[in-house]
Length: 346
Image 1 (spheres, helix red, strand yellow):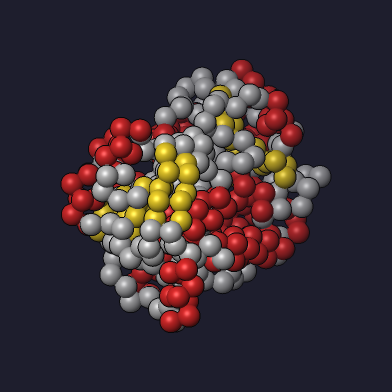
Image 2 (tube, rainbow, N blue to C red):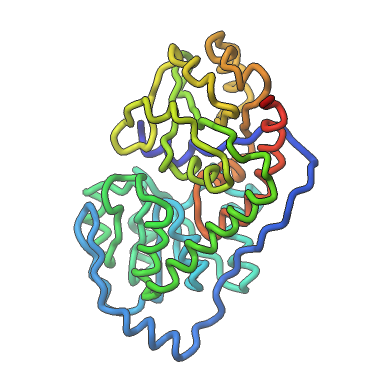
């Protein structure tokens, strides 16, 4: 499964609902650092971060930050450091602004300058990165190749993924970014903030308790895959109180993907999942997939207990866990999950 799939495949939600849901604290960016905070940050350097492609030696507090992949820009912003440049993500961006909406909202609310966006993935715009003159390049949840890294590390210290591309756990990413920015103590604080936001939201939905779910996907007619518990969109739902269907553990993970292709012939193994989550790239794809007999006969699908969405910003935000996406999306997610939960008869 390609890294591009992991960027564009995202969490899903069911049909539109007007049900009101509980409020969740908004994400905020940090105020300008005090002299004491600046001194503490300076004391955190030099720092060396080892990763799968080498190591990044950061000698002093970075002022000009560039981010690649997903999630690092959001964590950096939440730590009070607006990147000068970020990899563009047009699929989930607001067409009016060209930015992921939670990034645009957080930066403009704080009165900051929006980062320059540049092409990424296999078309990485190295020239734009050079022009941005970064002090550090953060890519702990990305798919940068060894060849790309060898170029980037000569521009600025570059932090890649700790193990495999697109497989960094969300909390590990936050800790890595906080360390790189000289704010290691802030990482655990942000992690606990995210956990609390999701736990508080889940606490308003006691009906979620003990309900099982599977997060599935397809790569075309006749295919079926399932995301594993550590995958971010699955972890998001687990922290709301839903339980991953134990059947997920029966399938061998495709290396480096946090997922497994199980084949449509195994669709009935999902019969014990009270709710299914998935995504379709568009309405035509949804109709094609749901017209398949084996798929249509999955109990959760048959009774309407399946959650999906075509809103690309929503799908993107509910697929990644960080200090900006969670408060932006969670109140939008709950009523859509509620609709699927209402189909479950216990």
